[in-house]
Image (tube, rainbow, N blue to C red; front, side, top):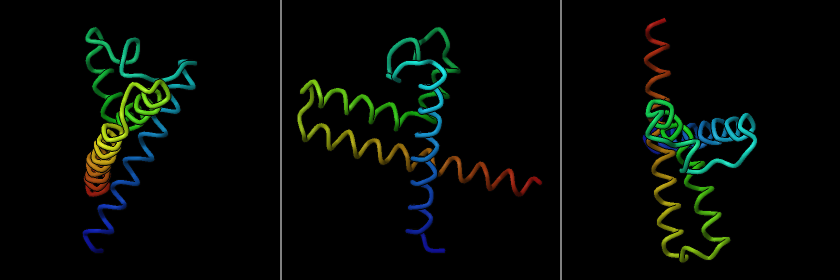
Length: 107
């Protein structure tokens, strides 16, 4: 497999996991996710870090969408935010793919 194919696969794994985790948490809590309390708090640091790690791209995309709707962010900054979201999904996808590869080798 080429490096490009692996990068696309890792990005898709990261984006899919962010969407699934974010949607599940929204469904369970009954409200929209955000990077504010009650979802991200210093009182529950472990929960907040795991949420931001796995659902971070979903959270950031949702915040960008809300900011654009309020006209609180300009188009260039929204594009930068989309680039960060893409990189975040790729990084979390790489972590997940490596973790699953490690688990399969241990079995």
